[in-house]
Length: 330
Ligand code: ASP
Image (cartoon, rainbow, N blue to C red):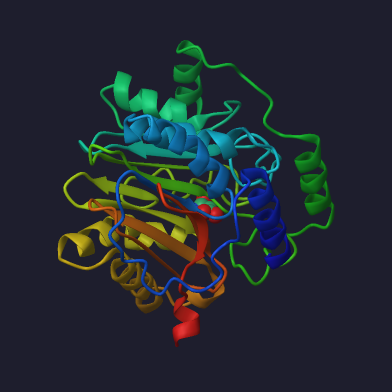
């Protein structure tokens, strides 16, 4: 887990041509940032933020920024937890979940989508072109194809070999981080929040879900209020980690509601993690990471296990920050 992450940290920094990651724990990233700002989960947030920044720095809308941003890991086969090249399910199928939401409260989602490299763009079309919020499986695929998306093979030779090995070893799927994920990370969604120069906030979340998941499984990432929630008057939040825990506590909706009631983004993320710790008996065997951004551009994060980081980009900084962890606090 650590090795892949630190490898990506180094390589992403080189690719992005930026300085050192901020290694200290961001106990409270509560600061007055000038707008625009974009934040996103994990190391792959660095190049994703760069793509979002192109839109934001040109004065574009945050909705275009988050879509452009998360399309980077979606299209990158080296990111094995999102889009093309993602780890398949137990039957060897790559099935994708994504959602998008803007400052007006408009939302679109796709779940269990196969063969389409950029589910986030399909989710946006669901939002903009249909009377619905969510399309799933075959219907989502047909909608994508009708709207000009190309059918593509998403399972790369590397992931096929990985899956075959997994099958041969007759291993069972488990989302518990201390069992299945020790050798190789099998989850790491990209969730992104951005505010443009006009103060409009949008969010996007996209994933291939838990590696080797049960066929048909859908996680929190495409569920509004679980994997992502945005309220234009308050702010937004995104989640990563074992989606089942986020769904059971409606995590990002909770974070935004706590911010509505006056909490800082960091405190709200901490409270949402504490809710999981209170309600879910085996939470210690899982990782959950939340990031949140309020409408003034103040951001924060919190997670269960040490090891969750997120990328921040403003006019003044381009960096990775480590989230504070509940288990370290105990
Ligand atoms: N939340 C995602 C899911 O449960 C996985 C992740 O974020 O790593 O599908």
